[in-house]
Image: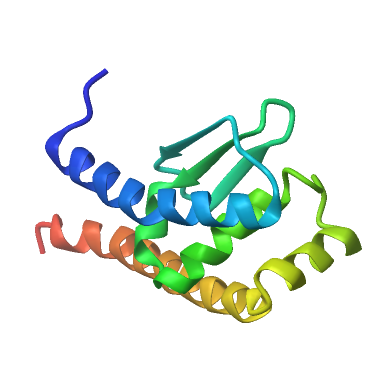
Length: 132
């Protein structure tokens, strides 16, 4: 399957943004993902498969400020050491990305705005196409 031109540009931008972060933080944390890939996921910013050590990032991370993308990268890399969101995981986040709580709050605000934009577009479409 071939990705369209806009998809090629998004993929290029994703790789340019995320791959240096993965390389840097992988060394710092002491982990190495087997593969990093990208999908247009709406409900998650990233997913870590601890069994095969792969990490998938949503193409929508391009909507986030760079420091919030870095939080997503560190978050997924920390899952290679700790699969669940327990005290050990939070301690790893504190160690490797101390501003993670602030970033999570920012990401949640952006997510709410994006969800509102999607709902607004959905509600407006019938009005645009009506015969009134």
